[in-house]
Length: 178
Image 1: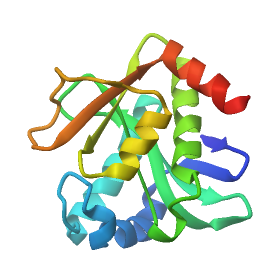
Image 2: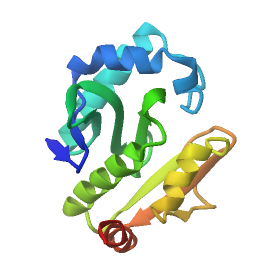
Image 3: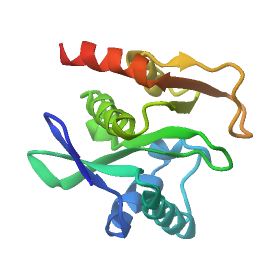
Image 4: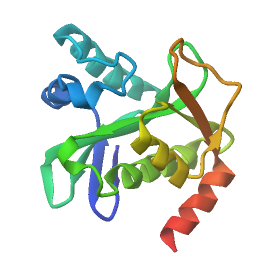
């Protein structure tokens, strides 16, 4: 499965993306807002990539983001996967520092959500992020996601939970396209 936006190509994350994830998950600035809040060990990175690849058996998952103009340059990842130990599907993603501030995360997230709802219109997608992650908060706000005060999917302090359903997303999509 591949997705395309005006500026980006998104392809399924596979074992071939191990070196990208080694770079990303081995970076202190890039992992400070992930659940571990630290760089990942070699074993954790390999398990992470294996989990991303395996999740595609459910028909949806995580994509690697590249620029259309430079398709061999992996700039980040984005996707929707089942939140561990729940029946909920959640957004995930991150972008290399040098590519922040260009709207790539928002653009790729919109494409993922659109693809997801093309198949699963009666469900919600959740976003979970640390309160101090202001950039994720701005993307969630721009997507018009709703705060979920009663949800707690992780046993971590400082997390905020949001959701969006098909109707709300469709409105945001139409506004983005106009």
